[in-house]
Image (cartoon, rainbow over all chains, first blue to last red; front, side):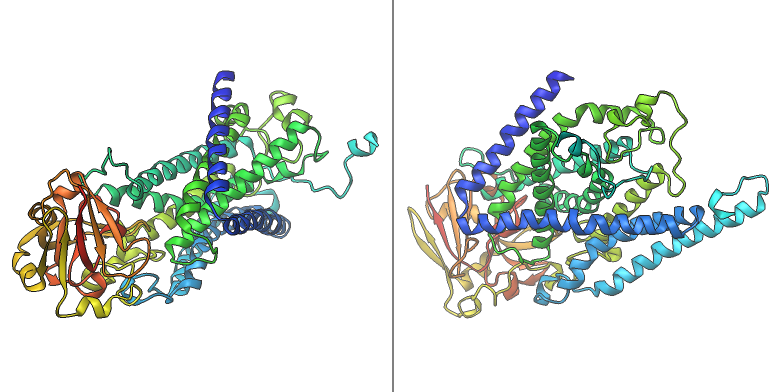
Length: 147
Length: 400
């Protein structure tokens, strides 16, 4: 394993240094300043805003939602969040381009609603089946938090 | 001072979710690593279309080659956005080790991880924005995207080297049994399974770890299936998140640059338009002569760097016949120029196998080219990035 780590590290540092060297020598100063700002902003937005928000939602669910329901809610929310991340920039950019480009012609707000409804509906059905099954099987131990 | 530093303050964040585990992270990371490598390799293939070497011309076959590689590049890049967010969620507690800067080694690690995360996020999001023709970043997309890719891949390789023991542990451990990943490193945590010995696996009262991975896979699957219709034609009808809908383009093919954007409408519709061929034996072809010669048909998909593509039936005249009449051969270097007055893409080089199979097209899908599709004449060649299928042709230069 040690030899692999050394090889990977050497190649990685080499490739990365090549990229940084290329950026620093081939791009105008103004671009580099903007790029640096974007890199820092990405860290601040992700680590400082998005991640704490997600962790806050998770903590709230743990506190207020019984475990059995939470299981399904978490599943649905993860899927919904992934679809939303991709859809939101599209909603913002829809109908901004000449029609000949066939680019972003859809009403992505409606499309996102359809997808979220499908995810929500599917999650709800799975949860309902689980509840019904738990009731029909009295031998099955109930979840702690469902008492 | 030292004792103050070694005692963790009460307000310091504590992460108790048993969902997080190196066993989960390693699996997410494995898929993420494959995705990054896929994007890098297909990206290099695309860059080669932009900067082909004279001694290694881009191939002309398979005709759908660039359609597949660039379709994969964009689809994988889009799928990687949610994937990387889940992966980063799974390791977020690592930011909060105590003390924060315990050693020079730890500091170096933090700096390289910061570079890895920021470069990857900027690379993925600016790539996505480019597909949306949205440029809130005010720099030349191609020159930054290409070079930043090396920074991303280099820092990923370094990250794998640093984390290899954890990766091996994570992949070898059953997903439900792996140590919980918290802000305390496993080898300092008396409650970790790796130290405390065989213990019952950690309880995940809500979603299980397997459920987490399933949800992530399902979410990414929905994104891929509803977006890839912009290049995988059968999935276009369910393309709820498809950026392009090729069938809605004029003549069934989208346009990336309209005649209006290129300022060519007047020049392209001028009745005295002629195609000038420069080289050893210069000559010119009138529109009427070209219409008469345009009897050859070929089926080349239009494949855009932005990931969309569409099948297309073309009619026109073989570029090679025009070049040979001008004194060139199949080994010539040929430059075609557009009526478009300015811009990086108002010309393109064609040589090697693509030259032998290229068509100067007058018709698309059975109809005369529209202004947006390059009227009166455009270049098309197999396995060629769409942006180099130069439209509104003005001159053909036989350079050697």
